[in-house]
Length: 248
Image 1 (cartoon, rainbow, N blue to C red):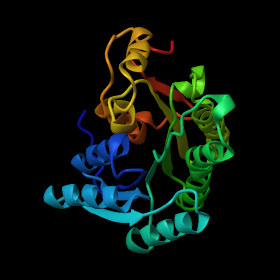
Image 2 (cartoon, one colour):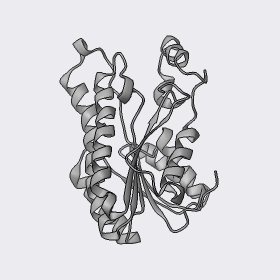
Image 3 (cartoon, helix red, strand yellow):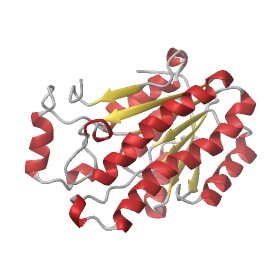
């Protein structure tokens, strides 16, 4: 899919690696100015080198989405430099998998604070500028486990289910200012995060995926491109599953 995002300013959180990195690169390939953002400065630097080597327009801003002051500072820097923010992709997320009876409060809180509170803080801050512009696209990355649950991921599933409910609510709030909010719920996608799964766990996911194969980060990135494009101007409050048919 070739789309023109020239003159568009796009923030991708968690874009140091994995799905976020590929989303950032796909937007850059299609002409966007991309704000690379990640709490991991090493990953962020690596992504930055790729953008430099390909001569993509970008700005790299380290940010921990759990920290309200850091989130506000990130947007201050974006607005100071570009005077607008067109598209926000909330991709930053972590896992701390374990069974409920073994789960410590820290494992619960860190996942909820990053995956859900982080989305809240970024959306709240972005919406202030988008409402003034009377335009904007917000795309929040959830997961199929936010819909169907998964053993050992009660914290992650809760955070991703929360993203869905939160996104539907703010889609209704922001629609009057020409701001769309949509959710992508990936299934089993080949990333560094899924590489650590056991063969049995991978096979379990593939066994309930009708297409019988894992997805690629580009599959998610291409959906993000569509939702951020004019082709999706009349789409808001939706959850799009990119999962090979896992959830129907």
